Length: 628
Image (spheres, rainbow, N blue to C red):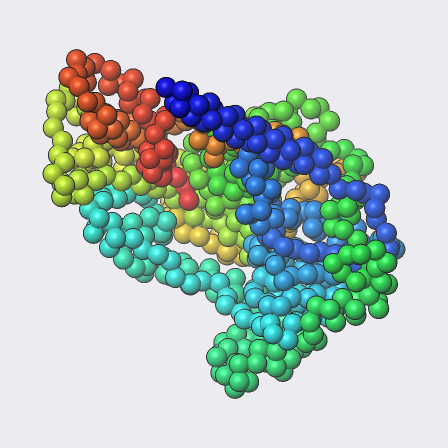
């Protein structure tokens, strides 16, 4: 007994120690997050160092508690596009900035339209006589799209350069799910709605191939044109069309090929590059990884805030997958975004709204929630201008229909007017193991969705009708917003994606331009004089408000509200699956005679299982008709 007590005290001590360590890590990380403010007073003469060791995005994702405790060490950094552009533009008038240095060795890329915006900012700086030097050990499409705008491009002797172009293969799971006995119950409208094809085909459909070839062809031609304009001497297309011939002819010497094709200016290691930059801007007297005087990017961004002169024009960002609820930045959560819009309506000084959309879509219900909030703004006579980023398709375009004017870039991916839903059932797989289903029905939908016995014909008919109705609503919204008939929209809809140039020809957008042009149009519609306005970005400034706890297993997760028949089926499917798992667990746990009524608490048990069993997340693919 004494041994047991001692062992118990030992275990309790270990538990208390682990809790203490976890709390210290949490509050230590929280302090680091809140205190990691850039030092705007630390700006000195030197080169503005853009060490882009991550990705450029429209809106960085909110940190999770897991990220906080891990110090974000497992995730690449996300650089906000507008901050990068603002820093480059601010360098033009700042005499302390002697040059701009792009370190692209760890650059993970960005959307083509976003990188074009950064490239245009680099061109403005170069035109203002700010030299731009770039270094990387290896260049590919995204990094070279930026590097092409530099005054000099340096590459490590042991590095390389490859252009892959857009496109490539995607995985198709039809053969796998057939072998596993899983049935993918698919409901869709749109000949070109290819998001569901991996679950219903073993290859790409002719319609999807046609759309992809057209889109990727435009994007590739645009990339080639931009890079060629930025660096006319580079012989890019011959090398991109036949890289194997060039590289094998050079005996595998990538550096020799890069110099011969005039893709780079210098072949040298990082030490030589740093020494060269130091000759241009001065040597750093303080110990630092770089030998040249440098200006920290975060400090420079902090020292150059967004202009606040003139009347404010609110900017709402819809970036990432559109979902229901209150998720932080990185996901376009309809509840959070709608709240920002309604808050803006209470601020009398805001004269117009610009909605920056960079989303492939998501939940139809969530997209509609955002659109309805924007319509409330229109009722108060606030002009609404849409600014599309890299992608504003499906649900992203659904939101855009609320705008008075839509801007996009030629390389913006948009359209994809179509909807779908996918719900799995396992009747074939479970039958192989002798699991069957039987019971009593009071209506045709009793016990549905039956993931053991398979979905009934009635349920399939209802779900398909619901998806078709969602598509009809989508088409009507677009028709009303763009001055077209539903039949005309259906012709250019059907789930097909379009590049921005074609979208303009089809009447899906009004003109080319970015956030700057959208702000100018909003100001014009609000009756503001040129230059008498500024962008007021409506997003949470408190870092704590961004913190999410979704990945922590002991934090209670709220049950998502039912948003339609698809959502109802998905939620019931999770509950039934959770009940089955609980029953199986109970079968193994009960070791004595039971006086238990299995039929008495079915509904309560289903709800409890659905909210606590993590395995049910496997069934969470679709909670509503998804315009993706």
